[in-house]
Image (cartoon, rainbow, N blue to C red; front, side):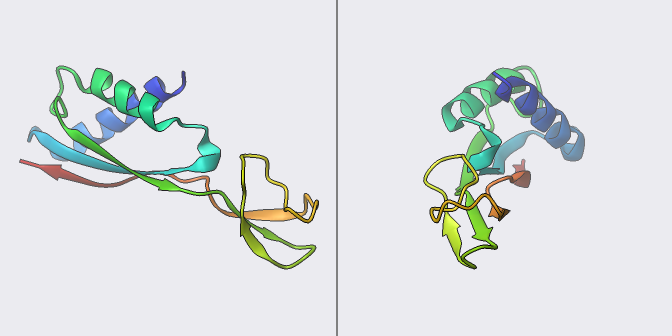
Length: 109
């Protein structure tokens, strides 16, 4: 479960930025290709935040689909799963969204 290491890093980052103020809310953008499971991330964030300035903070997730641009058929499409293949069968694709794993915002008291 790599979500715990990611959650610990997020908690460290927001607590540093909060500079001692209590963190009330954190918003993350998570792409479908990161293999981060939303329920696991919520659980791990709560666990990692225990005893920190982020203890009790709400975690909002902005989930992004996997989207690729196919250089063969020249179409941008959402992927039905995490395999970066165009529905036309081509693997000559560029991922345009789906790899995000970003702290978008945080709110402090």
